[in-house]
Image (cartoon, rainbow, N blue to C red; front, side, top):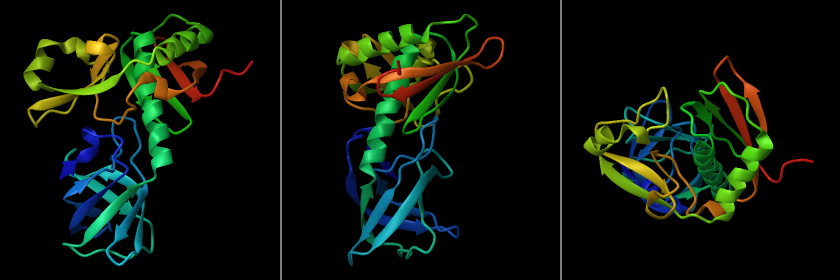
Length: 241
């Protein structure tokens, strides 16, 4: 299956051919612009447009037997396509763009707080990143540093490297508990800044093209989750007075 979002996160629709329909109703296609739930980012929603103009509402997307297989989950009661049917996939773009902005914001937070990441979850309005850190930190200071990166309008790009390149640069991995998936011989880096001057780390998620597109964000709260674990919550908009 060709995962088109890996190279173009701004692809809102695409044509595809149905390659399978599972007993549980999940639809497989030869290509997709729908991101599947993974790495803390939820899967895309939207609809499929059939050749006769009918719609198949898609309420979620998950990975199949491998990360290279995306299962599109239809809403209950939807008409099922047949293998070989041609469809046009349409993302819920407003939702996807919010997730792209939030996911990029999480990367920026890992720059401002250079500690091992112990967990993360991206959502449309309130995301979290957990860090292995013991000391306290001022959320207003973190917010200001985040907004400095946003206002700088750094470019965000994708680079592919070989597995061996990651082995030679293990510091690229910021997660303490999760290692990047292997098996294809190459890994995808999300790079921020010219020549990765701000950040570079393995990630299969979707991101905006520049930090300015993230928009105004702030740290809503910092929670203590154990002796050496802090949870930072990122929210859109200006920090409340």
